[in-house]
Image (tube, rainbow, N blue to C red; front, side, top):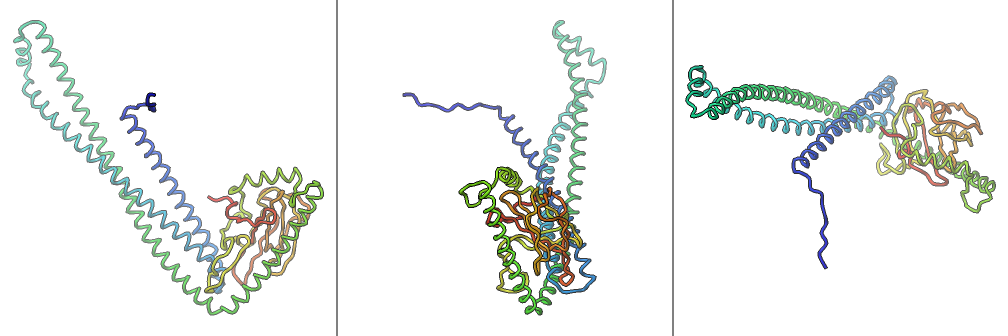
Length: 408
């Protein structure tokens, strides 16, 4: 039996190289565009948290709210510095590449100049019309005379083209040098910006350290507040689970299904639609940032103390509207100590929970649309913060809202 051989399409080497270069250039353009967008977003985030910080500084209070804002500013600042460093690295590669291109152009230009110098010397020797005429008349026959005539024509054309080529190369070289100087100036600007941002970061970390030390002096109060919040959270969790189980029993009864969490066909369609929007859901507030993430994490001040969150805390502007993240039915409106008003919206087998509302704009049974206002977030003046406590559930399972909300 013969040995089978795989067949490959063969492409010219020049085409392969060209494709590689084009792909690298395309990647570079995408990369620098992404870096710049990320940097712009970091700058917006810092400007936003600084605006919130200024409103708390007026009160001159020591609070966890101020610490959360400062922590967020530091995170955004660190991300900004990282973006600047990546951009500097990218520009450094650009400078190396442009230096190589300039060096190549200079070598090519030097060779052209040397060739052109020889042409000029020869042309100088042949500048006399009498000498040209004698060059033609000294031919052995007509054919040789014709060839010499064509040679003189071609030599003249070659001289003209050579001069033009040198001019073009000089222009390309000048353009590359201008590009290089522009990129170098951009790098200098970025280095200066990095230094400035590092100085700001250092100052912010000093403020953070001083604020933490002041808050530690209130350790007893912080521990008492934490115990209260834990009780409120546990009470809300039990209430949500009770509501979800009741909804499941109603759905099971209406669909006559044996499944524990059976849902109607309409609910199933809504659930599928909700599920497809993972990572695309609008934020429940128009502005804000996640000041406390999902799950267990260390307390920002108290050592060896762990905080648990069944959702996420979103810090936003005072009097900020709270919005539904998806189409659904308002199933419950609760009033709970420490959490103020709570709105629960069902989206098929999914539930979204909005806690810590100062006021509510919907009632039980209302069908709301995505981004529809359902209330106003409560502002805690003692803590200098306006925080929405937001949760997502699928049946009796808690979900991490950060994975479902849209991210820039």
